[in-house]
Image 1 (cartoon, rainbow, N blue to C red):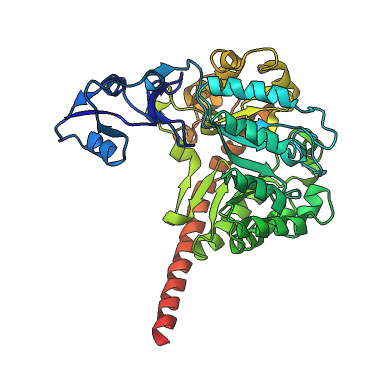
Image 2: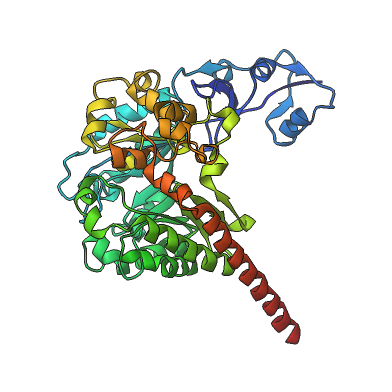
Length: 469
């Protein structure tokens, strides 16, 4: 029997993902395939069974029996976009905000980055589509301050693209907004900034911000929208991480990402006065990890750049050692986030990282897509050269990395951290050096083991109590 690639699957490729099977009717990631498989799937083929991969594709509805004389239609035949692929576009549609956050990386209260006109947004969406990009994250500043926010959502949808996430402070989320999303039958995840129980008002520079945040989460959850949160902390508020985990998990928040504010924007002048020290930060992490595991993984927890706890699997992954394999240093991206997320600032600058997109070095050296076509910027530019950095590139640039005993576990560290400390995107990461040189990986493991022991004891006690009922 002959089989053919089923609708809506098509064959596509990019600079960093040369051969893929894609479904542009859903936000699903492209599936990497070998060049030989791409040629194999380009036309109907005879198959009588015996190949597990093909059997799985048939079971998943990706392949179906071909009709007599049927061929793969032109729109689904192989096309290579030539530029880099990104899982999502972090699209900053405005530099304006209604809050006055102490750590704002783009100085949103004064909005020096301005915002795109609606007409320019439409043009950029067309360029994104021409690059094979489909998943859009709407962010600011505060994206909901735009009066034409739903027009922007419609412009995304009209191009067959997806609003997968809205990044907001939550203050402007209301039933009317959610009604409009429901009308369009879309349910983006809301990523809401929350900077600690008892500290949120201080960090956000607005009285009542914490109470508004709770009301927002309750509303979103009651309407069936998924909610995730980011938390930035100071040397004072770091003690609230555990209280924040307990509070948010009880409200149905799915995950919390924790990190110190980036030393850019408004935080650059406040870091020495308000920033947590590395010892304070890592010690508090270990304390939180023990409580978190003992409490049976109440929610997904990500400590940016260091460790990720996965609630559904009751496991954790130490990120530096997970992301790096010495034998693959020449092809291992030094930052996987760089490779996943395309950041576009409100004034059109492509940045390898959202947190530093307003930095003068980035604005002076990265492509301005008001002057350079997006496809060109994603094919060969200063931006692509940063995005394509590997662990080997960092080691070759830094003698300290080449001779370091921890290089087989680190892989080069965080480029944002290196840049904010040294002003050099290729420098070693002092924060990661400290992490390994002071034995924190082992301290983290010991804290997690203590938590697992308590968790087991708690489960045993619970089983006994249930048996006594």
